[in-house]
Length: 292
Image (cartoon, rainbow, N blue to C red; front, side):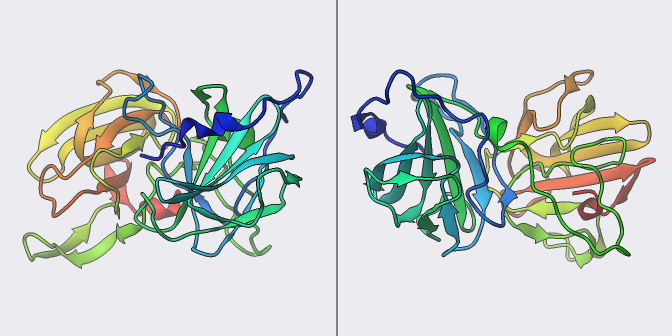
C-alpha cells in the first residue's frame, strides 16, 4: 500500500496564521474512485493512507488547492509531489513533476503528469494523500463526493449518487472489470451459463466497501461464491460480495455507504483474486453496471 515518506516534514513549517482550504478540487479531469481511505491501526500497520483515482498514463495532475510545492522528486523510486496548503498537505503519486519545490501553485494548476508505472493498482491510478502533522486523513472529506455527469436531454436520467431510494450505488472496489454480467463460458467448469455479477480485478486483501447503506442479512461460505456478504438496502434490493478472504461484519449489523465490510480474495470457485459483486432485486440477479 502506498506510503509517502516522512521526508515531507523537511519543508519549513507554514506560518501560524495559515489556514487550509475547506474544499479541494479534483486532481484529475476524468477519473473513477478506486480504493478508498482505510487508515492503519498503528503507525506502521497495514492500511490505505489515501484514496486511489483511476486514470490514464499521461493525464494532467492538478493541485487540489492553492499552496506551495514542498517536495517534487522520488521516494523509493516512485515520483511524488507534495503541496503545503497551510495546516494540511496533499501528496500525489506516481507523478512526473512539472512543478518544483518552492513553487507557489493555485487550485487546479497542473503540477505533474500521471505515470503508468510503478503502480500498486492494476492500471494507472493516482494515489492522493492528505496529511495533518503525522496523521493521514480521508481526502474525500474535502473533495465532496463525486463529479456531475452530463447526459443528453432524451437520455435515461442517472441514479442519484449513493441514494438507495433511486438504487444509486457506489463502486465497492477499484480495479478493472475483468468479467461483466451476462452469458459466458465458466472458466472453471467450462459450462456456458449466466455470470450473475460483475467481477472487479483487485489484489487479494483489498478493502471491500458497502455500495450503499443497509443491513447485513447474509454472511456465509459456499463452494461457488466462497466467503460472501449480503447487504439489504431496502426491501427487495440487495448487494452481494463474493470470493472474499475475510468478512468484517456480521448478520444484523447496520453499515453505511463506503464502509469496509470485507477483504477481497479467491475463495470458492475462483481462478484468482477478485471481487464478485452482485445486485439482486426480489432475489434475482440483475446487471450491477446499471446501478453504478
